Every structure is written in structure tokens, then in C-alpha cells.
Image (cartoon, rainbow, N blue to C red; front, side, top):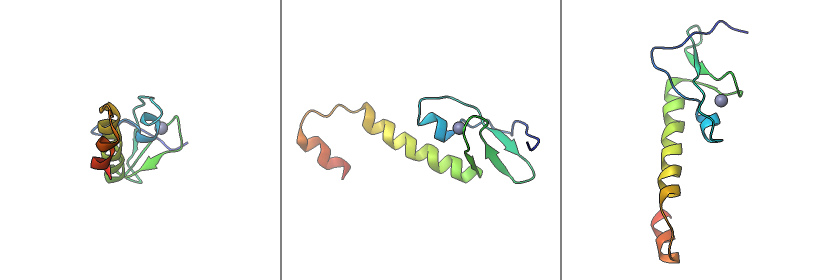
Length: 76
Ligand SMILES: [Zn+2]
């Protein structure tokens, strides 16, 4: 396995986080990529940030209570 160390910033693995697992990723300095020891996720910093943004959107909707069909139209 490639040598890994923590990067400047710790990012949680977005792939694991989608499964309700909070796992810190390691940083591969040679490839300039973050990778997760638990799943197969690897990605550049911008990939991680983009995925985190996606998750944020999902959670935002998840936290909303849908009370009528009209509420769904806002998320088209
Ligand atoms: Zn992971």
C-alpha cells in the first residue's frame, strides 16, 4: 500500500459519509489525491469538495418535512 499521511486538511470520505460513516481520508502527496482506507474512494481535493456539496444538498432536502405534494415542486 502506498505511503499515506494526513493532509493539511482532514476531509471525511464522502462515499462513506453517504453510508453514515464518518471516516477521515488520507492524502497521497505523490498523486495529490485523497483516499479512504475503508472504501475504494480516491479523489482530488476538488472532487471531495464537489461530492460534499452534493451530500449537503441531499441532507438539506432530507431535513425538510414534506407535508403536501406542493412541497415537492420546489425541488424539481
Ligand atoms: Zn470511504
